[in-house]
View (cartoon, rainbow, N blue to C red):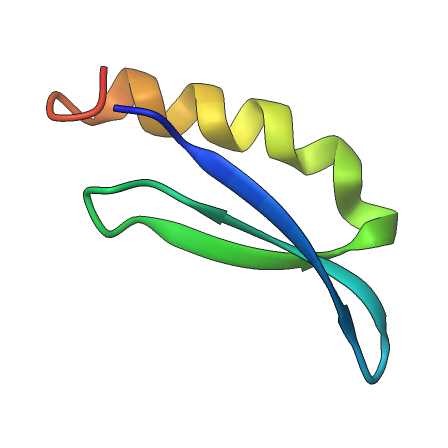
Length: 51
């Protein structure tokens, strides 16, 4: 399944939401951008539905 990432402007600055059709998702601020790659890789490897 395809994981999507969308950016949006919040009161505290830019944030990003990563979501998968299986229901897995999380939000993170722009300064934590480096966590997105490992998080998606970990989710894909742990979830049979999303591999």
